[in-house]
Image (cartoon, rainbow over all chains, first blue to last red; front, side, top):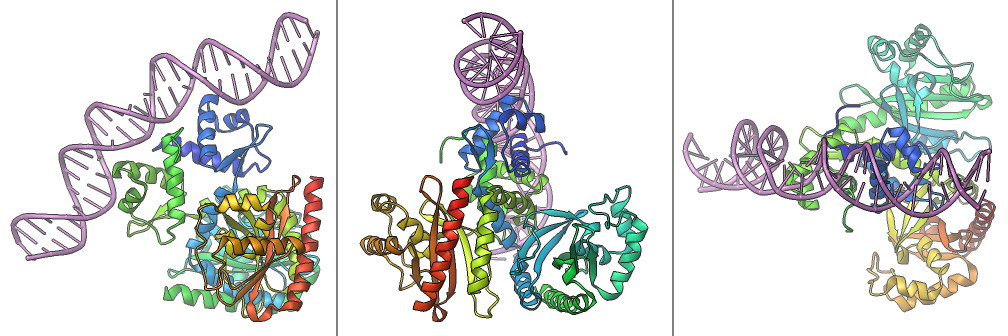
Length: 252
Length: 252
DNA sequence: GAACATCGTTCATATATATGAACGGAAGGG
DNA sequence: CCCTTCCGTTCATATATATGAACGATGTTC
């Protein structure tokens, strides 16, 4: 944590983040403990957040975020005007595959999910927009990494353990790097139950004008519906979408 | 604006809201003018927002929201656990109608859109999650109003003009009240090009345990695809979804 | 190209915040 | 039933913020 420029504001924002990680709500003393605040300080900040309608307090004294935070955040994602274009092409791929699709942005060692279209099939993936997932265990993430030079990937994961999420998760950096080399050949990243059991994903990265990975698209489906044929067919669709989005990005 | 409890935080939050209304970004002096801040104060707040990564500044000196604001907000909507249930039933209705659906919450004289499922048909509605629309000109909104006593509706719109959004918008309160009486008979609200031309919507309100309207579901389609038959069939689906969600709400 | 605007940044000090300590109420234990 | 403990709230004052004024940089006008 860098030294604050404006302590009140910094702590208020930290408080919003903390509450966003605790949907069930937190009590004053819990907030103070988590952020190492004196209770009088925490009280003051929470009061302001309540007055500004970002937080409400339940009858049991639990502080939670309100939908005002959602409103502000939602416009942030639509401010990145490319999101409209991404959604358009996502929709077109979805029309063919009818499997849950996600769109994400690269964010440190994680991918941040910013949009999704859910499959109408009864067996489908659960997920939600706004979450983060590790790069090394998702199709979108591996697509991002494959769009980076190997040195950059090594640097990014220098000293960072690849914690297993399932028993299929790649936990050895060299193995990951090897797979990234394959992905660079085709442009298509495949992930088979590395993030959640019985779920497979196919992803592509979309690069900005400077060629740096920025966005990714993926298809997620129950593993039994993802075979060689689907990987080939859906992969092609994703690549086509990727190229079209990149063309728009260049024209911007 | 109430007197601040903590001025820094209050102003910082106002600043986030302001930026959320200006996706194209604002310069320091524009921010200061809009919020009536001295430029040194605006500068300090923006610096903190940048340091906390809620805002970034473009090469041209334009301040914009980042996706960090989106992340925090997204979890706020998922914190209202009912959103999972709503989405589930929305999905089931969507599987039949294949028209764009929305889910919204009642917020003052407006409906706040919190979720959507987009039609895969080539002619479909443009909209996005996080926006607000006036109650009097949307199917969701009229469903909300019909779930309130007439006196409450009168009070809500006391002295508030019903500004036309299209030439079909209901702009006379008595006419709106009359239509609400009809909606109370069936439970289904229909809106025909009152919000946007060539778009028709069907909506239902979902009430909480105390019987107060809280959520709404709607189907939006090009007007030519919405005839008597669709209104009846889709209206029934929506009513069924409404009842199921209300049952869950009572059980919570 | 000189004079003038306009904008962002810096800084000293008047003003508002942060917090330890004290208070009051609620819950739990003996 | 009293004592203890744990929370949330209030308050005075030590500390940090807010801001007018001054500065430097950049762009504009004539």
